[in-house]
Length: 421
Image (cartoon, rainbow, N blue to C red; front, side, top):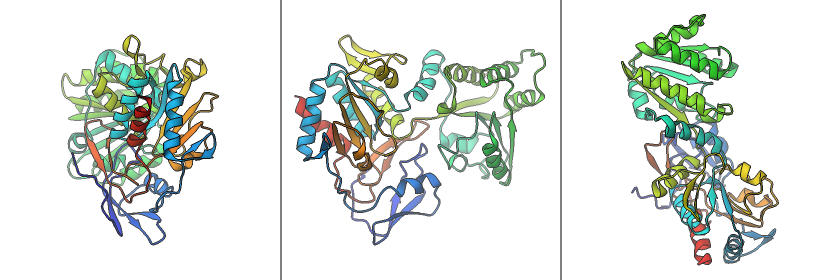
């Protein structure tokens, strides 16, 4: 595994950005005399906003129990007592890296906790469709070097992944002629497409929905399959032809944009990809699982064979993609304690609840109403780590910019597990 130890750093630091799904590693971070962190070279607004929450100085954040500052030992002991007294804990948020996820899995097995990400519903959308029907997936590298048609369903993904089209090589000579089509986009997406049209070899178009997204995907799937469709819009007929004629079409979507029962949309698009692969090449690229949630899902899956929304319970391993929804469990009072993890984003705060709560996260979460709060280091800022990229095929190392003096999540969770023994 790549060495990510924290060296002494001055001036510019090689950096892999942990704050979006793409894990871009083309920028450096400048540290000035005041400790302020600024991005140099290529970079996006998402990374700049995230860096503004940190300084390259040791953290002064303190653990807290019942709103009072305390030592780390006292906070760990309090968290262990809370979990030991719980009959059904819930682990939520889950903003961490690979080592943190491994530690959380061990603790979840020890306590019988149910684990679900903050955007668990979006994660489950593609997982359920894949479990039912399977799919053809792809990687960013393959999109960059081969895809000549990108179909963005529901809009462009630039809010969640600002450098997406750059990472896909849109406008580069690797694929001389590339088409970008947005199905059901907004005015903001039109502005993005206008920018793409200025790049060499790029054509871009926006097609409105015909009814809702469910109906539009069903209609497009029928057209791609060559079935007779009465009164089909000319734009959708043209899109179906483009998909069939493309050398390598990639359907891109953000699961968090999808409506309720969005797994049906994903399944319909996967079925269309299957149809295309009988005569040409096609794949799907679903973007989701930010703030480390996708990484935690990968780790839990390789350790247990099951994704999130699972637990090691009295009956063994259980996976319930609907029943183990964190918000549903809280609303129905089916759990009696909450452990919330958010190492990257202080805005990913725990839900308001009367349950005993342990928060492990960014120092700015100290103000959250928690029985126990322990500040932990952010991987890629104050400590090294590893994250999985959006396409799920590559795990990248995170290099620390400085040593923030805070324990890693893995260290804290392992200490809590040890106190439970």
